[in-house]
Image 1 (cartoon, rainbow, N blue to C red):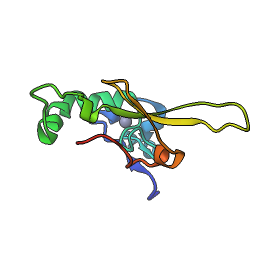
Image 2 (cartoon, rainbow, N blue to C red):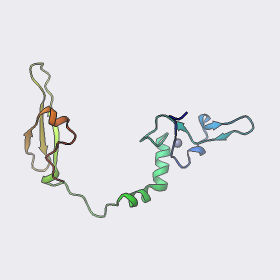
Image 3 (tube, rainbow, N blue to C red):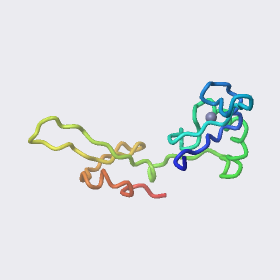
Image 4 (tube, rainbow, N blue to C red):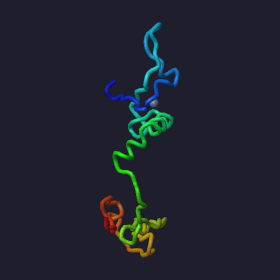
Amino acid sequence: MSDLTFCQGPVCHTYTTQDRLKGMKGSKTYQTRRRSNLLFNEFCSMQCYNDWFRMFGNRAIDHFGRLTEPKHLTEQNAWIKNYDWRGNADESHRYYTVNKITREQRPITEEQYRDRNYTLNIS
Ligand SMILES: [Zn+2]
């Protein structure tokens, strides 16, 4: 049972489905779901995820940092990776990085494309 974790939905136990009904006859209760696979590792359903966010979302955003001004995508951080697919066996895909502001493209290797840390962006 150790691989099962509880859904973090604050009112998960109030959804009266058969799978939540546990216990011996005469002392059955609806219980928070336990699962090995949960949405975002925390929730048994979108309903429970939404319940959590409705109840705690504002506090979570305040805790981790609320945006009070717009973020800006600039020439310095607008590089994304992409590739043109090539179907012929004698041709490899064409990997490149493109600036979403200036539209400038620069070729990169497949290794650079797959490297999650490789970027031309300046943070
Ligand atoms: Zn739940």
